[in-house]
Length: 550
Image 1 (cartoon, rainbow, N blue to C red):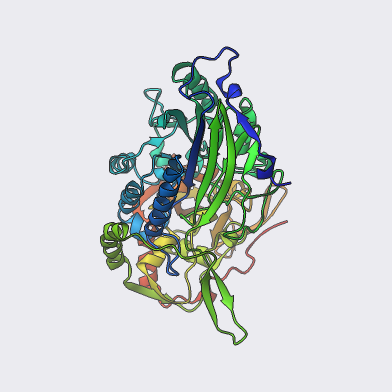
Image 2: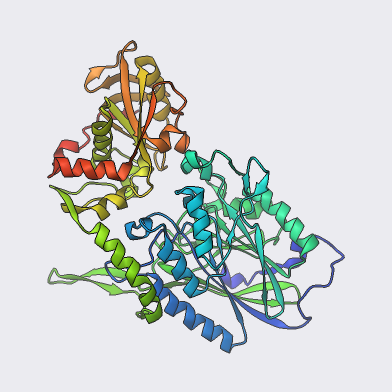
């Protein structure tokens, strides 16, 4: 039996945490129809893809249609984002995601969780984005250390047809680890689940909402098995009183949360097919993959203090599949009927798109073959593209070797011409290139620590001019540029400011006497390297088993 067919009712009595309840805003014996729409991990995808998929123009048409349908049936709509609006598409990145926030305004988002990638820029940029947005940025667990005050609104109260709905925002406490530490000197990310409990208690005592839901950027991990990640939505739902939250609108893990069975997601969800959300401890948990590929739709009925999920859908936004015919020809075809783009949204976004393209579409070089940067590779094995990035950093700094997190490589580069856009897709975060001079002994300690970073994580290390065998937490046969490591010799190590300041849990280097932050942006350094070394011979950068784990 599917999760949905159980028709599990969320009792708000548990959420209110009291036997003697104050009078609520809702009317007795009245049925309220509430539709929650949601997206997450937008990552700059305001424009349709090269295949005509997703984009805010089609999303607006879809949302407008749902709003009209729901209103005709006497219901109400809340539209929420699970955060990470920033970072991923060069046209957006160059413009600090202004087109994305202005597009979200036009669609009519009600609130957004603050994601970890909202901190890819200095705080001044984030505050500017807040000004552009006509909806609140919510996070209850982000504090300013110096004042002990929250940096964002912890919640918002929405009145829908007389029903009082509280929306809490929460952000993964991994943010300080996986974001740029330079931006967190006065920021503290407290444990979301503990903060949620405080906020729920405070809401029930002071605001007395009829319904409490959360929009989060914490991740959904099957059965709460979060590995090296911070605990996510499942773990939080289990830690709270049963039904304390009616719904968690999630993000961060970038999954379609469609359950195959209890505590097990569908491995390969097919767009347009039924989707059963997760339920943990009386709380529904939803997540709509990434990039605006889907709009999640949860239709609830509220009656006499009970919130019942009537229907759930993940609605594809013009997603396509590649079909190959018997004659060998192929094309991309829609999974579901096409959604037209909204003319008003196109009018808003087109100037931003044109401005971005003009800056990005210029050829800067070429490559003789594919440079591998896919997530499924750079977090598991050494790749040729990572070697190119590291070669660029060494060239700029005169370094003997270079190291970086595999998670810092965000895309591949196909054979042929390379544009600035390609470069920014690979390195969108705007980190600066740094170097440090270390003794052989210090370098060995550093490499040993970094080599312990696990595959299938952003921390998995990419190396250049380094060879070793790792076993039992120790390194043997360590060589730098093909020569055995000399404990007494001095070596220059290049890396990114992100890793040098402790990002991804790497040992800090910025507190060492020989540390220099060059101030050069990683993408700019890569761009210059490609210009100076084109065409790039992919074979010259192909890993040859230099580093191995046993």
